[in-house]
Image (tube, rainbow, N blue to C red; front, top):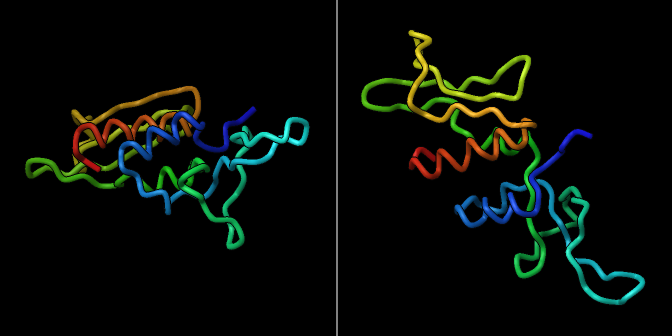
Length: 132
């Protein structure tokens, strides 16, 4: 099964890193369990549209692959050099090459099991390295 968005744990980490929740396009919503009548965090993400808003006290925002990629800078300038983000065509990798030379940079080079996981890890690494 293809992963369509960040997990609850990944989403909480992105919020902790300071990613703006208004950039999320999905959410895990608190709902009432029909059998117990108790409130619980849903395990299936729902798409945010005009009628659904994130309640930050209860809901957990989630990001689709498209939204994650939109958060990642396509170009990063570093010490008079410019690096372009690149994505593997046949796998789930993401990295930065120096523009004009094709040389890999010291910026993150990540390959995970899914592109959602790869994009999530790239955002975390860029935040850690103060590049995002």
